[in-house]
Amino acid sequence: MNPLLKLRPDYIIEKLGDNSAVCLIGSHPIIQAFMDEKVMIMTCNTRIKHVIPGILRAAEDLDSIVGFELAKTEGNIDGGYTGQSPQIFFDTVVGYADRSGHSKPFFIHGDHITVRDTSDEEINTSADLIKAELAAGYTSFAMDASFNELEDNIRITTRLAKEISDMQVGLEAEVGEVKSAGQEAEITTVEEAVTFIKGLKDNGLNPDLLAINNGSKHGNYNPDEEVHIDLQRTGDIFNAIRSDGVCIAQHGITGTPLHLMGQFTEYGIRKGNVGTLWQNIAHEHMPKELMAEMRRWAEENHQDIKKATREYKKEIDSIGAEYAEAIEEHAYRAACEHIKAFRSDGSASLLKEKIQ
Image 1 (cartoon, rainbow, N blue to C red):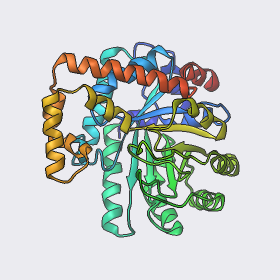
Image 2: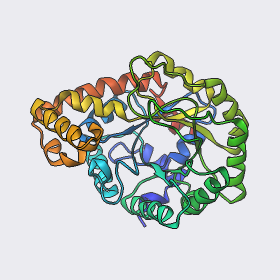
Image 3: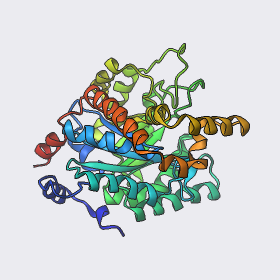
Image 4: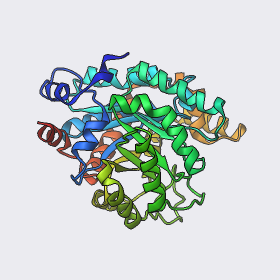
């Protein structure tokens, strides 16, 4: 077992005071410390590695905690559509943090460890991924069996997450499937959320975060599509489950106006996922010839452009320094804007103060 997975609050205090070492911690103490703080931690799906140093630099300059994550589709045992296995992703993020002397707390999160049906085969693929992420050193995990009926969701989440919950590194669960842009879905009700959390608690699980469908979408919004997130329902759900020590995780933020994001913290949202934005930034600054090849591949294979990431990973990873620097600078500016909008600037020092 990776020793990083044995983190406890006393260890975290020691590490927060040591600026000479990478400070990789679990999301559990962060979320619990910020239960009543109006702070949302930015967690980034970095499908293309060149955005990572810019995000880290922004977090360093703004004294902010930040998270890095890949979903099961993005980075499974075989690398998913980004070509990054859990070990590759872990080594990439920690490598950048180590080389830059990053001193602020961050966590590495297994996003959307999905189970789309009740078959043992489907459940076992997620169980195997969890083992790989634990072995790599991930410090936070999101179980997503929201595709299933509520009782099955409770049962599957319990089966997969018991070991993680006992470790107290960081556990997120999901009720109410978050759809892709252009798809419709039912907004999660307060009753569904309460029943779900109670079921997990009765089974011995203690999640830190609950992801819900509150109207957000994954991916790029159509410019003509109205972005609508039901914050009132979100706040009602948070108020109903906060006594269980559970906050809200917000998915599908790309495309939401920055000036609205601070409001999210008023409704119990403590973790905000940002994914497609970083892909967009990387694509904007990559060599034109490479992007043309990726678009051609996507068109010929009837795939979203994101699926070309794995096919061209070698070429993406080896782009010239001028392209990588342009991506880093753009990612830095965007990360600074988001950290400020999320009210996360100063969160690293606030965590140290809250824990001590």
